[in-house]
Image 1 (cartoon, rainbow, N blue to C red):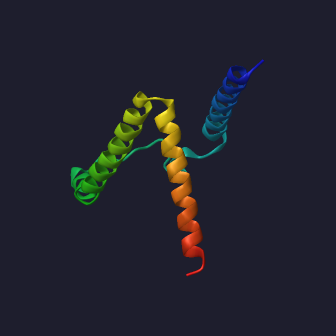
Image 2: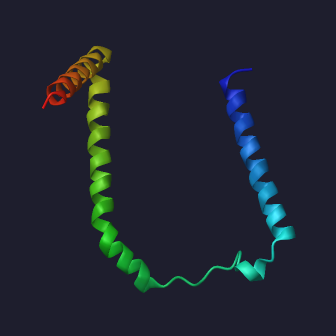
Image 3: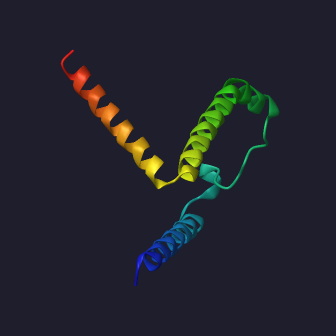
Length: 104
């Protein structure tokens, strides 16, 4: 049947399992005891504190991913041969690094 059918079967299995777990939880578990499906109000002061700490790191991560994406897009536009050159150079430099640091 192919990979597409296997992927579809996997998605259907995951959705049916999630629905089964939800139904069993709603029927057999005391919702008030565990405070399930009750969400507290959002406190903006907590969100601001998290963003003060994590905001710069999120921007840095985004810039890092954007730079690698741009790099690989430029190489891919150049053609298949340049991409082969890149992988050959990086694999040889990685091997050289491994061998040179092994006996230190």
